[in-house]
Image (cartoon, rainbow, N blue to C red; front, side, top):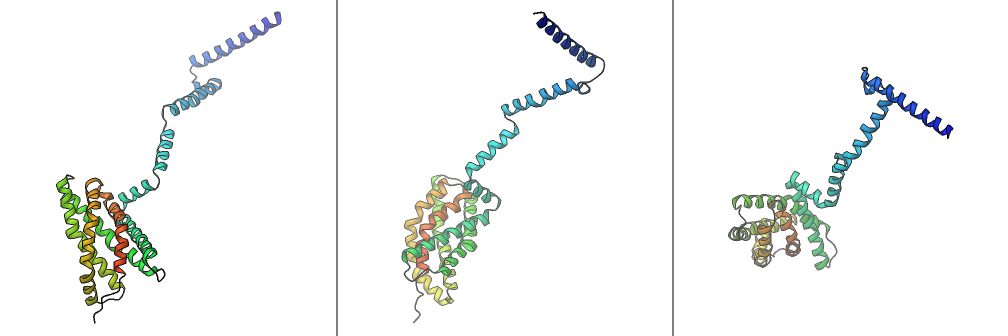
Length: 251
């Protein structure tokens, strides 16, 4: 007991001396940084403990992690939407090109019996990239500005213009483009249009109105070319088949 009491008194004395030393340093002009013991303890509390609190309350590190996590969840769709915003014409053109190439590939797998024609697929991809993709971007932007409402009457106006103007124009260009790349002259192209254009437009009038209604009524304008091209996947299988028909005999 005497030894324990001596030890306790010794520890108490040391604590009092340390406290006295720290107080002396504080009240006689020395800052916390000038006192090595206080500075060390201050660093422990000022760097360790507040960091925990900041992380708990939502530090920039946590917010960044949350943002990156949500971005990773968006994935390909987020990347595509970003490209639509930064490079709309190029993105829509490449998308249309891929859809047309895929549709032609499918069409050949279904109907072709003479082997795969890679040049034909290249023609379809080129049409989507150079002609239809940019024209869709301009057409849908034009309609969104000229007829900005989304009521039923405005939607039917857009559908009518699509069937009366945009559809016949792009179909005529499509047949002419493919015929020209296959070596047909102007007279042969005109004969092909006379033979194939009207039946194609009649069949299109039975396919496109439902797609156009959904596109114009519900789809945002920057995604309308994607929706239109997605519907065109099935339609393009038919179009590429029509474009692959033999040229009209001029005899």
